[in-house]
Length: 269
Figure 1 (cartoon, rainbow, N blue to C red):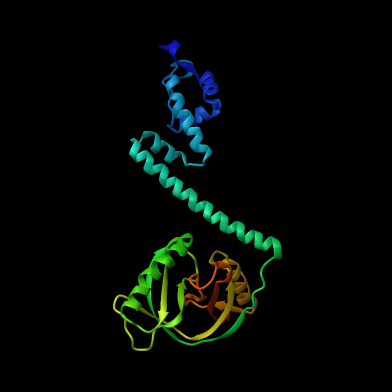
Figure 2: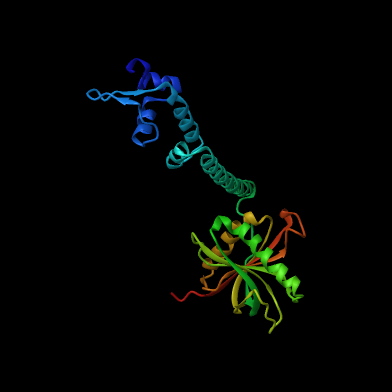
């Protein structure tokens, strides 16, 4: 049997891998040699192990975690397909986030930080009927769409009068999992079964308007929060508010208009 096996050096050349990689795969339990010399510790591999070795190297080149690779190699074909598709979806999401970052970097490279006019004013109390959801920061866009798909049919199906624009409510601090809300302003005293009431207190706010894709809202928030702190103010605990003045159904994304509002108070610290 010894003559049928390959030394680690020959096996490495066969698979176009390094001896160091094969030792690492062995240490991780991904690809165990068929035989290890008792006295010498030499590793020997069977030729049929080359497929697994090459698959491991290919998946590592795609930045798949070693734990996922180990699960995929040990899984039945159907389960292996599920695992790889899940990794494909995660990669697609990462690419989408990178494309957003690329767009912002291009905008910054061309003209520096966009100029946003930040103003102080007083916001009236507003009574919104909302739907809520919990999501990660990267999921805000899709979660807002899901909330709208729950909100608008209820308002329309019951002929509830509401005053544009639609509103998005977000926590001051973006956490790993956070609650957001999407709602519409309704007349006083109008309750809507299936929706929750959110009363936004009035008071001093700092605000600006962003024109362009939602993905570039961080640029506007950068200007808004910077202005808040530069003026000796501090954000209040009330939710950050976005008013969607011009939405995707009304204009291309370059012409979307979003009003950003942060309740503030004097910094007495």
